[in-house]
Image (cartoon, rainbow, N blue to C red; front, side, top):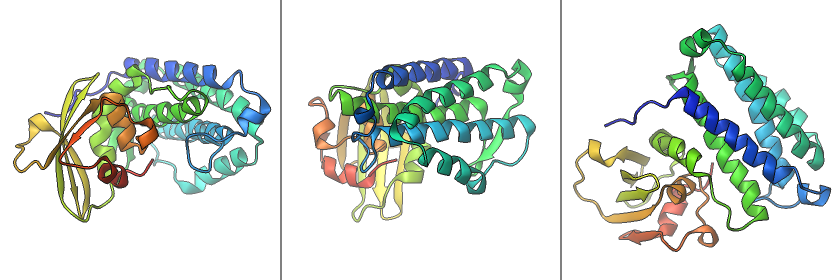
Length: 265
């Protein structure tokens, strides 16, 4: 059965807590640390912060479009935002992301109950509610916050409250970002914290993820057991060997096959 639609207040509260975690990671940084490598290939911590800062402004454009019932903005509107953030120094990127993040939160708080309820926007080929779009922002925010945090503390994890809201949106993400597999693979995925059952198919056409209780499961070639946090990081391309918990158990499929299918978002 499809996942229960997210509660807007729960998504908002989790997004605000993710902002607090980002602030905790960034506030004590020195200038050299701002320019130090993040988890992301070829991106410094400052550049990850820049991506999140420009993202806050981009999502504010989405927010305004949904309120005004106008078409979703596109690359032409995003490019000046990206250029302005790319021109900042590392310390500026680190400082300014928190201001941009807070401004986006203030804009959300200013919406009336009617605006929140009536908010709709066509994105990625389907109509999105405000809660759905904020889940997209939460996924980006929580995973990139981890990219910064884990560069400073190798034991860092993505927060449980964010994982609980991100995991049920993975099927749509898998369909967009999964890479083709030269040989078909069908995997039963079982997660804990939160408890979920999925069926993951990798084919020459791409990838597909479904809740296991909504489909028959014939011909499964393997099984994957892991926490919800590890599974989310796998799909977002962040479960490399150095950051794979010992509790991850794969049978009938190599983890490297799955890593190849999901190189990163």
